[in-house]
Amino acid sequence: MNHHVINSDTVLYGVIGQPIKQSKSPIMQNRAFAEHHINANYLAFQIAPEQLAQFVQGARAMGMGGFNVTIPHKLAIMDHLDEIDEDAKALGAVNTVVNRNGRLIGYNTDGIGYVRSLKDEAIADITGKNIVVIGAGGASRGIIHALLKEKPAQIIVANRTVDKAYQLVESLSCPSGTLLKGIALHDVNSVLSEAHIIINTTSIGMYPQVDEMPIDLTPVQAGTVVSDLIYNPLETKFVQEAKAKGCIGHGGLGMFINQGAYAFEYWTGKSAPTEAMKQTVVAAL
Ligand code: ATR
Image 1: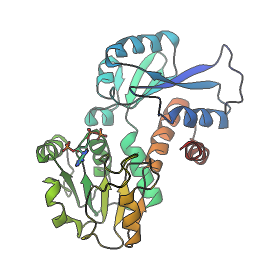
Image 2: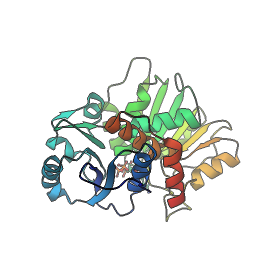
Image 3: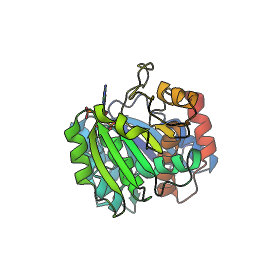
């Protein structure tokens, strides 16, 4: 997809993780660089936890322009950076590193990428809304941090291990006017009928377990936004069944594209070609 010639000016970008072979970030970011005729290349690097420090040293020495960080390094990377953006710090996770004149700065574009996608594709205004988030892991934490900035009326976090839901809500600072509360997943039915937005952050329904659903949709009202962070399959059974009963479905592809778009914008200062990025990713799925 890159039409420029790789030469001595080419700047290296990449993504690190373990596993990493499934990542669609290289095709997406190389397409974005190509669209803007930027002389850069983006590669995937399989890095084990014990190699992380060495990788960062190498990135500095080689003058990498920046890199994305995925599982299992989103927390550990923070110890190796020169500066961490306020939101990434509050969130406790970094997914994007920018090399600014030799200083490595960490950001998190997952939560803001999700909220941009939710607002663009499903519901323009989140202020005053009742939100139910299923799951209390790293992904859940990132999107709740970003959702709180939109001043919803409430965010209820429902998790199988209820203590993790309690810990998560206690560790986030919640603006006045928003109720942030943890509940057990088996009690989620009592809050579903009041919800305007329901978000699955667990891996339930992800390929190859495509017949699984995180919750029973019976109490959910028509018109509710039903959102899933999963993008493989592009539409989960959860979102499909919700749409069949009159809900507004929202899949995880937009979040993936937008987290990459924000990263591209931080690296290059240019507006990301999101349509081209999306086309490339969909064609590769
Ligand atoms: P991520 O970083 O992708 O959020 P994670 O931190 O491992 O991944 O979190 C996974 C989340 O999915 C957790 O909330 C987990 O619930 P538990 O805290 O009870 O483990 C939830 N999850 C995963 N599989 C699940 C299942 N089969 N049923 C219910 N919840 C599940």
